[in-house]
Length: 577
Image (tube, rainbow, N blue to C red; front, side, top):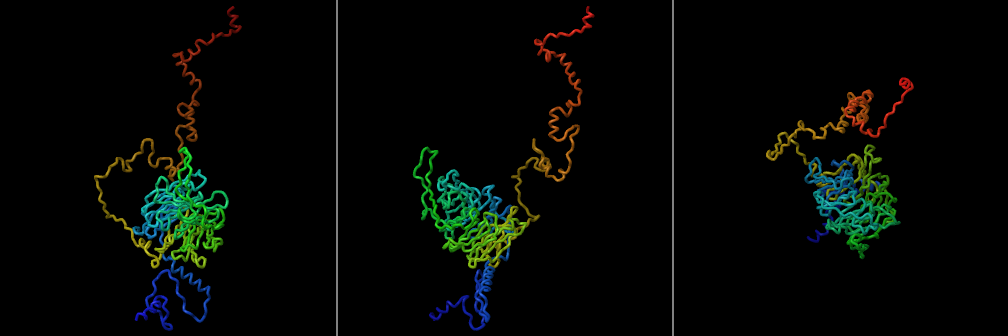
């Protein structure tokens, strides 16, 4: 019976032919999931090819895109610019322009969807990129500062990369970035390799194992080839899925592909053979390598001067996507990079972190679109989903505000969207109870405990420190300070006190406080006001003092005063005769 069982096995399964005319298929139904629909039964009237293709693409998106349910995680004060989800799908990172990073744990989070930790990597610098390590024990945080940082799984800082010397012209001789960073990514498989890009015009690969080493953690420097002398910026970077090449978007309009590995082809040592004395002018031996000749260059991919916000490789590495701030999304075939495959226009964006990426099955790709005029009050943004095979838009999911960052996780089959505006930011999660697994499904059903009046907490009375005047009714201001609500700023904010007119100063004349101060210092107001006194009385009040103490007035002129000679009139002379 063995030879009979052999040829019958390939017939079993979902592709088993129908037994008999009109007889339904026997056996269990195929499992649900991202599966293309089977061919329709033949009919007498032939159907058009265009209609069948359109229906098939719509069904594919409906079967695979999880849009049945939505959850919103709020908390950011500005737009969510980047996100990173661990490979196992248990922890989520969200970065924003409010300089903060929130860490969510789906296994411990409840229905309130609150993060278990919030960190501020560099105050005053927005967060541009986040990336998990392949093992999930560390993550990379890239801000607008020239020094990216490495954190552990729980958000504790492990260290930061070195900063380069801005006065060195050749970028290969600096041990770090000397301008604000624009992007970064962790290697897909190597635990120690990290890639970053900067506005100084370079991409750098770091070795995390040497983090904190005095010689630095820089492993290699990637210098883009320039069409003409000058400075350029690398606005976006990414690894290929297998980690064999690195793509960087340059501000001159080109996208340059470099091989990875400091010892590979195209890399040269950056060490300096001659060291000049004295020690203050010595140049330390550069232990890293550099590459200045890209493997592949996509010339004029976008207009020069425009910012390319994101680049992404497909799973097979043959397709490259580039998202630009001029509102375009272009598809490139890496086997023939000289010609663009498709250009999608009218995708408005004004943010430098607008993401582009592929779906888990590599059949679709997506990007974010801002609201009209980048204002939430003018309308909603959207997440645009395109078909990779037909190169057309198949879905557009509306999002309140601007849609900047997006993430479609492979294991969870859930879509994470970072949106918001200048006033607030949030992370929206699209999932389906039938198509998605774990992730948001784990924490949405957990109810938060409500506080009760019968709650009791044992308090150790011996460890309580009693502070004098701790109650508000006994609090008094410190010497030299005003009480709460009595300061000038507090009075200005009080809506009732601001309406009360200023009371005039009693028994004094004058206008503003400055005028009163000047007049009082000049004895023009108050008890010593000389304008209200008799000038003769003011002089004679010193006569008695002058008689009693003549030395105050006469001694100064006692020896120098001439003898007085009085004039005699004619009448006085006649009388004397």
